[in-house]
Amino acid sequence: MLADLKLSRAYDGLIFLAEAERNPPVMRSHRHVELEVNLVIRGSITYIIAGRRHTFGPGTILWIFPAQEHQLVDRSADARYYVAVFKPELIKRACHGPGYQDLKRENAAGGGVLSRRLTMEPFDVLRRLMDTLMDGALDPDLLNREAGYGDRSDFCYRHDDPDTLNAGLRYLLILCWRYYRSGLDSDQAVQLHPAVQKALALLAREGPAGGLADIARRSGVSSAYLSRLFRRQVGQPLNRYRNSVRLSRFMAHHNQPVHRTILESVYAAGFGSYAQFYKVFVQSFGFGPSRFLRPGRRTEAPVGAKLKPAA
Image (tube, rainbow, N blue to C red; front, side, top):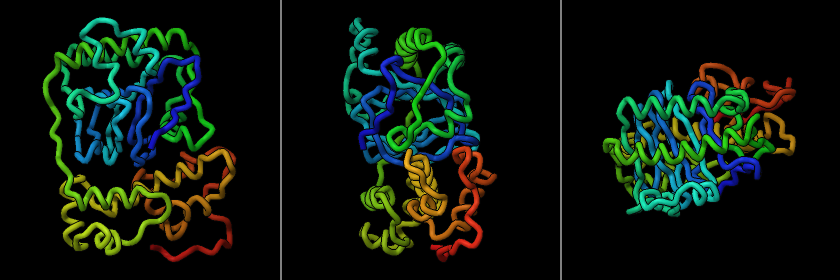
């Protein structure tokens, strides 16, 4: 899916610090015309790109090119990682020397994922620069709550000083590439079994997916085999992943400009009841959903509402 980050003409890109403890899971597979860089500060994050699982730990810098469909499928509870994106126009203006021409590509050279583990000094330089560029950005809670839902909400990225941000992004782009090229190899990719890839595709579709038995049948394997294989290759149980997809779908539906009730979004996401949704949310974040819902909207099910039985 081609995602629209809805960056206004005032900005050459954006940057924000994603934090697992307050950033809702965004499980949709997507790509965008902007070049993306992640710098893992703490914990770990896991992507699926081109049928492979990639897990990145602290100190890792990774590049996601415009043609690369990517899906964040897991992250540790303490994960903190910077996400920066750069518009194609910025890259054209900034990259002239032969050493930077690969940044103009639609896909990574060789079609893989470019990632390296940085040594302490370049890691600290990039982290300090990214911290500086956050000055003047939106409130971190707002950025973490809204980031990732661009084409499904009325949220747009903003910064108090676009000129400083744009100049900093240009410098950041060059430094990230220079330090990446001198880093240490780190990627431990896992090629996904076709049945796991099929199950991921089924779970990613809009609307409620079938139960485990139905997903396994449509993936061409038994339920027990799919459960074991999915956990081993994706790094988490299928049911936990499925609930994360449902939470992501709930956020996307509820953040649409058109007003939706809580229950409408709960059922559209594939949950069987508000009680089930609330339980999954608390299990995932340790608190209720009110922190992530828009101000002024009810955070509890309406009194007397008839709840569907749990799936």
